[in-house]
Length: 151
Ligand SMILES: [Zn+2]
Image (cartoon, rainbow, N blue to C red; front, side):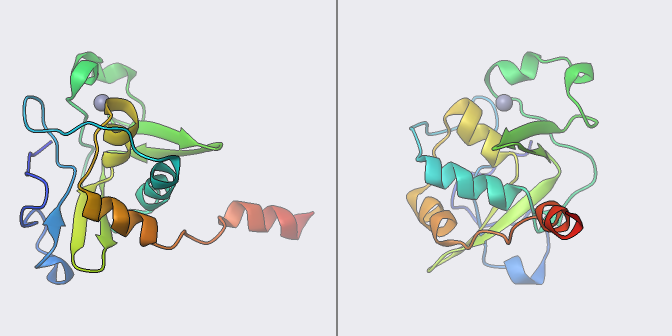
């Protein structure tokens, strides 16, 4: 994973909408990584955002923090992606970038940020947390709707 300091200028993808976006959660071993507990509400909304990343890159990035760097890749499902689950919903992380629009800035973060927060205790900048908390939840998933329709 490429390292970018939190709140530095986002230049990973040349998307016109993201010319002024700021980096959050581009972590790397032995680099600055603040840790502190986060709220359940924040983690729930972050999971929702990471389940529908706005940008995707080719292949999967792998977490290289802590003990994760010692996990043999053959044990990581979905061609190196990392699976995360919440309330029975599973998502594969490692190939997406989420875009979060705050009141004063737009943030771009790898979808692995959910893993970093929940497994490694990473605490993103407060402005990013506030932006995630203010973001709307996605509509109910289609699987539930089709179950209701077919019953
Ligand atoms: Zn990890």
